[in-house]
Length: 411
Picture 1: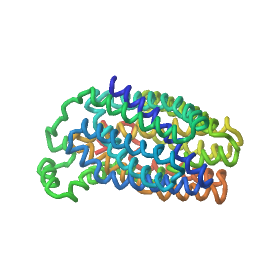
Picture 2 (picture 1 turned 120 degrees about the vertical axis):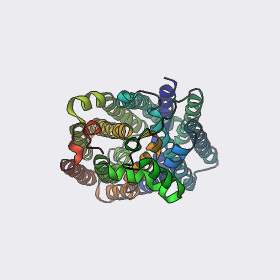
Picture 3 (picture 1 turned 30 degrees about the vertical axis):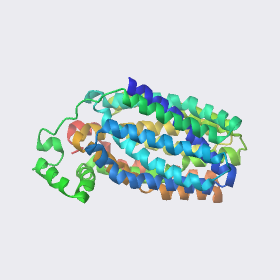
Picture 4 (picture 1 turned 60 degrees about the horizontal axis):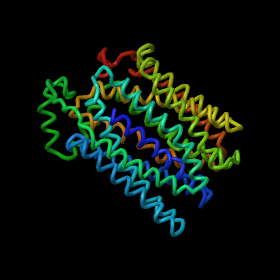
């Protein structure tokens, strides 16, 4: 409960930066392409950190690692309002945001690994859903309040709130203890197949083999392999979507900062709904139908976002999109937690996120450049259609299995 509550408050604060950083860039430069470049650089730093994040999560004390990540991000974001008091410094954002995102990747990988030490294996999907739902619920008030604060006191004030939220998260983690990390009991449990324990010891001898341990596990599991490939293309198409939405509201519709916060707050309702529904939906429809259906509807929502001619339409389309992303993302993450042994979970999570975010920086740059050059409607139509193709391709992979964690389709 302490972990749940502190992370919810942290997400509420983090939603301030989600709005404030793009607004700072837009206010000073007026360019959505510059926003996309910053998003791309931050994502690239996150991908680079992901290469080593899994090793840190598997080798270090996970509780201490989470606390230090929070404290480092609190310090980084705290620099921005102090420096901005002496005048706009766009270059600083290109330093702070990539560094914060790199540390954030380490935090997120470690965060995923500790959930299974807080709940029983059969409740992992439910736990992830509840964490996602309450975080999204906090995100409803967060963007709305962030828009008000940004409009009243400026975007730097919103970033100050975000810095403080990391301190709250660190305090919450300091107050709890995680369950013991189980050791692999058999070669099969280690996920390494025949001679698994010997292979793991051999991999630990070399640094590069250590880095590749998670990627090897993903490659050996048909469902996880297919998910990694298809989600890489999905991230390429959607990573810059928040920047495009903000640009659409500010440039195309001429709405103030407060309206941007209101739209993102309403859109977060979709994340709440998707997080609460993912458990029941997966139990009723199975993994394959849940994941494929969510990606397909997300594609349609992206098309609708580009076609929206008002704030209400944009908010509804964004809510549907975020709801579907929650269903697909939580189902995918829960499956990895269910089939991966604990001593490998950090490296597997790190490898998964590193690979599937690797195309994101280029995608964000392309999406935002296209929105500025050809219009939001065109890029959303193309991106949405491509997401539908991803859903169609998934039908021809092991992803379509209803219960891969039980049937052996995952490994």
